[in-house]
Amino acid sequence: MDRMTLRPLGVGQMLDRSFQVYRRLFTPLFLLTLIAFGPAYLLSNVLLVNVGALPLVPEFRFDDMDRFWMSRFPEAFFDGGLALWLKITGMIVLVLVLLFLVLPVYVAAAVILTNQTLNGEEASISGALREAWKKYGRVLGNCMLYLLLSIGVYMGVSMVMGIASLMYGGVAMSSAAISGSDAAVSVASISFLIVYIVVTYGGMIVYYYFLIRFGYFLPPVLFEGEGIGLGRSWILTRRGFWRLFAVYLIYGSLSYVFFVAFALVFAALGVSVTGLLLTLLIFCAVVPIGIVTYTLTYRVQQIRNDAEDVEALLIRLKGPQAPETAAAEA
Image (spheres, rainbow, N blue to C red):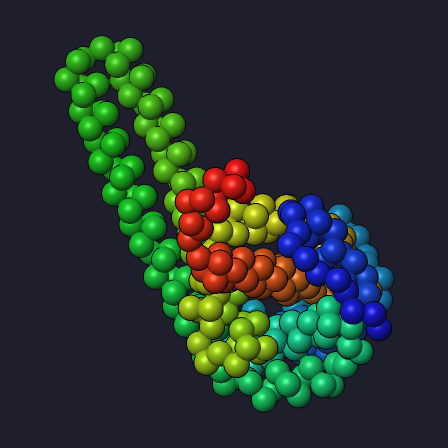
């Protein structure tokens, strides 16, 4: 496989290159996602759905929809008892296994697969899984740190947003009440609404700023030998936030369209064996796009930073010019 030529790219170029890589890697990434989430998806349906009552193709019975839906769930959910608690316990264990074992290994393996393709290497699912498993401890630890950091930033931003909105609202409404005119109350209400919108969206941008700046912790752990990748991520994303924000904003909009289609398929076919299988296949096809975009933008940021470091080194080595030399060059 040919090595992909990478260089500093703009927003549109990064998205276009991401879809090129995704097309190359569609089969291995699809299979990797199916291996990671297929068994858990099927097991969850065995626990939650009365599989024996599911038709092969969807049946639409508008005359008695309540009975139609209730027949799709095991009787234990309505009768209670030991069987219900066993199913609930099974679901809790399944969710924990997914969050703390399957998901970190899957994301790491998908990043490794994408990086193999960018380097012109043959994509190997087994090799990527082995490499991801070797670094499972560091990957899980960094994921937990990032999760705690995200929660802390969210709580901090939410607190500041709430205090700012309440303070401004209190001052605006107090001023309007003192004036006693209906026009002042209307102006205060409109101004509070505007400030609330500005504060809300400003807080969201601040929150996403930290998510992106610290979000590239995984590739340094996998490829650069970092123990904790948060600091390296902060360095990699310097002067690149708005570019990355635009990439993920566009990607998020496209993902929303995909998952609306996903929800429509589930709504139309979800109460049948065909619907459950088709939902799984759509999930396996769509989810890897985000990981490909993540890995490619990491590589682009790495190249951009390396170029900036080289430029800064050349400037330092060149040193200050003598006045006569600078005048001659001018």
